[in-house]
Length: 137
Image 1 (cartoon, helix red, strand yellow):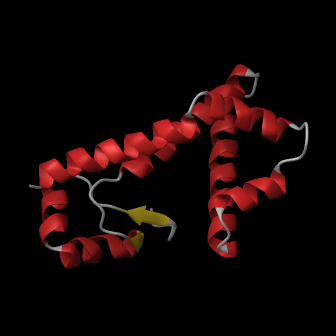
Image 2 (tube, one colour; image 1 turned 30 degrees about the horizontal axis):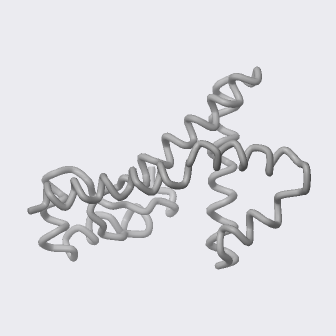
């Protein structure tokens, strides 16, 4: 299902090799799905799915039904992405807008920072891109 919201990276080994050698061909296959950005691996997409799953699991732990938790996690991500794209503002600035002193958002953010979430996600994307580059050569 095409939503116009997908950023496709063409990650199978066969298309990866085509994309690495012929970005025009890779882009032609990806553009009908949404924004086409030829990059070495769709690791960011996989990381986002993992984050959504983890967000939903936290809500399930607090008693929310899984289907509702997954939908809410997806809608939070969609809303955040739309806000980022619409405003063009840095993520930190947007985060400041929705973080109230002594509130639940700052509490959750500090727990994520304690777990080094930014570094773990960034390293995951970096590692996947490195392996994708090795596969393409």
